[in-house]
Length: 478
Image (cartoon, rainbow, N blue to C red):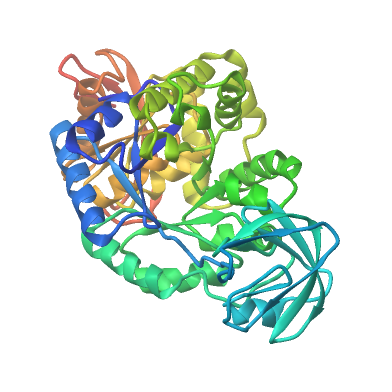
């Protein structure tokens, strides 16, 4: 199955989309990667979903990526004696280590790490930012705050701290258990929540030991200040706009989205734009015009992928949401302006042999107006390098490694085929043409460009470009 767009689509699975028939329909509608949210998924259900996705994968013969999204730390208030209180603007309200039920003057904050890190002047956002407090006096036992924006507050509402650098790991004991279960099951990507610094990613990678790739979710203001280091440590980036928009002024989120998209592309790391992209389709079969523009903006910016959350997990119209995203992507990519935007934003190649080869291959393919740019890749890194250039022709990645193929499902423009490794360079050239011919990318008599590493099968050796003509049977010759 060949997609007619370059941007990839992630669809979250949930109550509305967990059986074989629905997952099959979502894949046919355009989903390239399926996300499993461990905030709501027990291990048995996760394993069942992975098995179902692999069933769909085998029936279509195309690699499908699976991303497991770890919950991360959940910072919450304690309970109130009456279940809820009304906080008034200007009043004093204390958060403390006392575990007794709260009232209109105080409540337990069962996170000593927050009390230890808070400083006067720091903001506390309760219940997704609906209530805002400012710390006036802080100790390790309590924080005296003033209510800046009041409202109703009830048991165990979430706490966000945009100004406070918390000395806590991005991974809780639950996350560690979820991670190990996911790795044993054989998932492809791990989305890491609550990332504040590169060390959070490095800690996760030590546990993962190469068994999956790591996608850092950028949802904390502290991560923005260390973005370059986080991108370097990560395999991919997710712009988690929902949580980011709680802890930062909403008007800053669009510019940060663009900055992160361009920084990730410059670094050659896939970037996913997430949260509330087609939010109204949870209840409606059609999106709002503003949502369509939001999705289109991510496509124009050259993001690798766009993601559906509740729209596909719990909404009434999961298939329609995916197909709507698919149509928006196709339409934007037909726009002549789209290509000019990508070209204007193309970063200079890194000073490595692989990046120089990828840039040269793109220039040759576009100069000769070739119908396909074919990568032989063992680890997937060659295809990622080529995709960074956002070439005009489609990128066909051929790999003997199914794990690499599944990870490439999130990368812009890459049509991945899992096939036996080439025996030699002649076999590589011949089968590259056959595969591109079979999948409808080229016709007999056309030329293709092939990028690979020699010796074959050794990761990280991208060093060869060849132009070949496709024969009547699809095989290629120089």
